[in-house]
Image (tube, rainbow, N blue to C red; front, side, top):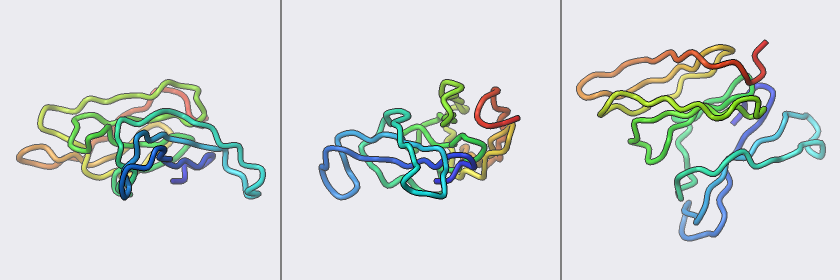
Length: 134
């Protein structure tokens, strides 16, 4: 996924089955047009053994990525600052709610859709300072 000043990806280790691993990690590198100049670094472990994260649930921008907390039906959403200026932010949604669609990351907010029994909502969440926001 692209996050403006960075790129990020999920890496699995300890192959178990198709798209399943003993451990999955979030990695990133500052964006550089020359592949040999990339500097990959592990950002954090993810709490899932399934590596195929739906593109609908992941968005990046301004040095941050928005992703669900696993399992996908969890009522938590995480924003990770790839510049490591901030610890990952965790938003706990209302009971019986989960992030169904990530819309995007702007300088100061993340936007995502929430399925909440029996309705749906769009959430705009103000981010703490960090990332590559001015």
